Image (cartoon, rainbow, N blue to C red; front, side, top):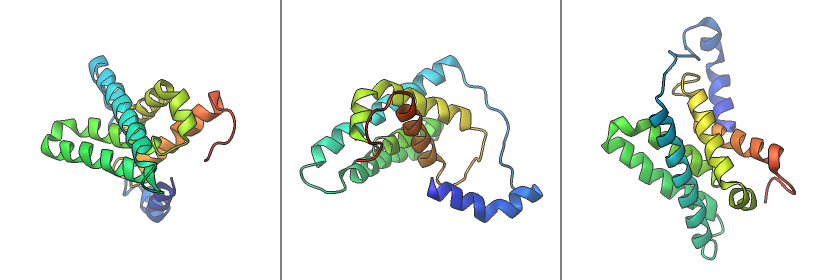
Amino acid sequence: MIAFISVLLVNLPEVIEGEIEIISQNLFLTGEMVAILITFSMLSLYLTYYLRTVLQKRFSHDSVIASAIIGIIFGFFSILVPETLMIGEVAYASSFAGMGRIKIIKEKFLLVSVIVAAIYILALPVFKGFGGKLGSIAFVSMLLVYILHGKGELFE
């Protein structure tokens, strides 16, 4: 979220003057594509969660390492197959959500996955190419899940 706000602030003069578009053309996604994005959001969140639990015993920053590994895998795949860019992006956003409070991820796994995918889809035409957008999607998703269903501490 900090990266996104920083990029926005640095580019604010160009955004205000209309030199940088913050809203691009509206995209239409088929129901099949929405289902694929939700599926990969779930897969990425699960893999990040699982890898994080495996790495917990060995590393103190297990969530960052787990997210980075999953992000590299999906990012590399998107480079090899450019048509899968949206899949790679939603998977990377979900891996960022996987760095959140483990109790929320464990108890509200499906809800987190669906919200990440939904916010990603809604945010597709907005702030295209801005750094920090995927992390911001993950942050907002976890915050929404916490507000809607969370109990206890938001951060570990």
